[in-house]
Every structure is written in structure tokens, then in C-alpha cells.
Length: 183
Image (tube, rainbow, N blue to C red; front, side):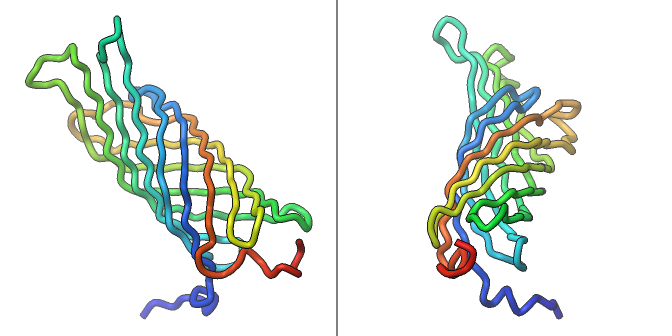
């Protein structure tokens, strides 16, 4: 039997839209997008499942010579601390989950032009969230992410580095707080 706090049944439920930019080590720098669904587990702690897709390519003389891609699906816990009486929060997030990394170089031999493998993703971010209404907020995070555990094609590759995330969140069940509470 799983015991969950009674608060979960009256929790806030969120959806996120996310844009990200990161330095992915051996997989170059990539720009991406993603989304997520989450809920308030207990006051100050939210639990999300999020998806990121990031990609980039290098060109030489107008021709694409390398492509990079990472698709990540992870579970994330967010801790949020309210700053003063304002709808402004300092957040810290930690996430873990599977990730598929693909590196394709058109200069490689035709039968081996792609390296692709599943790994384990880990991320740690911190930043600011601002709720500008009862149902909508914006957030910006910076942090570090890493994908490792490769056994074949990408064994020995260093995939990870600095990451910036910006996003919008919508509260689809519940409110950010009562209108007369704090702000």
C-alpha cells in the first residue's frame, strides 16, 4: 500500500512549455524545446515529468556536415521558496531519467554514419519563478545536465554541461494561492 499525503488529492496540477539552450560536451551546443506535467506534492515541493528535445547541426560551405540530437524524458522534483510576500520564488530542481543521444557525421563511412545510444540523464537547476496571475507563471533556470552510462556507440563520450531553461507554466487545477493570501 502506498501512503500519499492527503494534500495530493487537493493539489495544484501544472503544465509547462519550455525552451532550453545548453552546452552538451561531445554533442556540441544545442537549442531545444519541451514540456511537462506536474503537481504539488506537498507545499513548496512540486513533482514533474518533463520532456526535452534539443538539436543542432554544423555546416561547412553551406552543407550540413554534423547533426546532434538529444531526447530526454525525466522525473523532476522542484523545491520553491517564496521571496517575501510577492509571487516570486527561488526554485531548485533535480531530475533523472532516460535520454537518447544521436550524433551523425556525414564524413563518416556510409555504413557507420550515425552514433546513437540510450543513457541516463541527470540534471540540477536553480532559478526564479514568477506567478503573474492565479493560473500563469514564468520561470528561468540555469544549471548542469549530464547524460552518461553509454555502453556501445557513445562509450567514453562526455555528453553534458551548462544549461539555461526558460518556460511558462499554467495551473490547470487549483490556484497558485488565494487572491487574499500574500499578494
